[in-house]
Structures are given as structure tokens and as C-alpha cells.
Amino acid sequence: MFFGEYSVSVTEGGRIAIPKKIRENIKGDVFILTKGFDICVAGYERDDWQRRTGDLMNVSLLEKDNIDKRRMLFSGANEIVIDDQGRFVIPKALISYMGLVTDRVKVVGVGDHFEIWDEEKWLKYAKKINI
Image 1: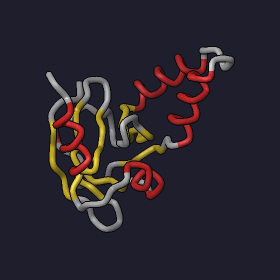
Image 2: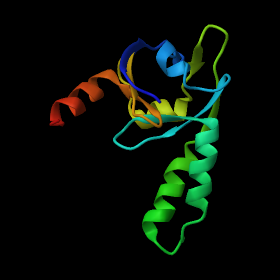
Image 3: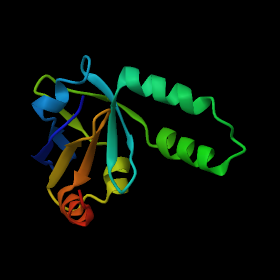
């Protein structure tokens, strides 16, 4: 299960070090990174991604919400390889999608997946949430 909130620096090329607690939940060195909701990108363990997308392929395309979800998730999906130092590069299209404007991101565990946010956008978002 993915949990925790981690502040991570980003290189000019979009490379980040994945937090150890997040990496421990990824089988092997490959995961899926795609567009998330709320201006972030979402990371999924590969087996979980296969299950989720299989479920999504079995819904009716006559409902606009279903095709919108497919477009969002599949158009931004990238298979990401973690290097030997626990780092990976966020693809440029996803950096643009999340509107990365600083050299820091928040990596946030969300149970069944994790999200990567521009740090300033995460802090603004978190202030609006009442628990």
C-alpha cells in the first residue's frame, strides 16, 4: 500500500529519486505513470494498472464519462523504469500536464497508487481539504 508524503527535488531534466517507502511497493523496477486528476500525475504498480485498465475496457463507450476516463488515462500512460539509484525521469508531457513550476515535488501515497504534484500546488490543494 502506498502511503506518506515526501518532498523531493527535481532536476532540470525532470529526474527525481523515488522515496524508499514508495519504491518498496513497486514490484521490480517498472511502473506506470499517467495523468492523474487534480493536476498531478499518478503512478501505478504494473499489475494493478493491468487490472484497472482491464476493468475500464469493459465499460460502455456510449457514456461520455467512460470515454473521457479512457482518454485521460491511456493518452498519458508511460512505462517508467527506475534506475539503480532509485531515480526516474518524469516524461516532458506529464511535467507539462502537472504544471511543474518549481524544482520540488510532493510524492503522495494514496493507498492503491501514488501521486506526484508540483509542491506549491499540493500545498494549496491540501489547505482546502478538511479532514
